[in-house]
Length: 83
Image (cartoon, rainbow, N blue to C red; front, side, top):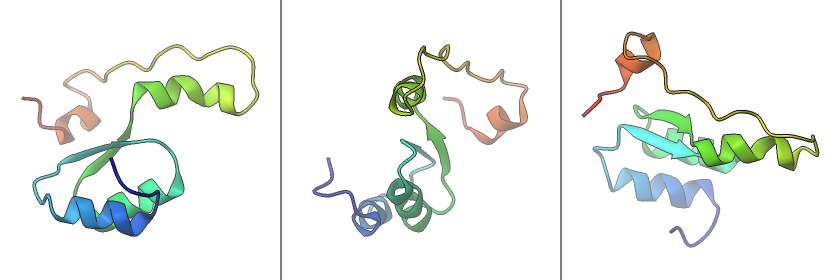
C-alpha cells in the first residue's frame, strides 16, 4: 500500500521495480500519471472490480456485466506475455 494518493509516490514505487510489465489500476488520474512516469513501457489495465463498480459511482442504476478476457489471438492479448 502506498502512503498517499500522489502520482509521484506511485511513480517512485514503480521505478524501484523495473520489471513491471502490467499495471492494474483504477481510473483515478493520479494512477495514470504515476504509472506512466514510473513504468512507461508497462501496459495499463483496469481491474474487474473497478469496472464493475463504475456505474454505481456515476449514479446509474444497474451493473454492467463483467468484462471478458480477450482471446489470445486478439492484438491486445499479443502485447501481454501470458505465463
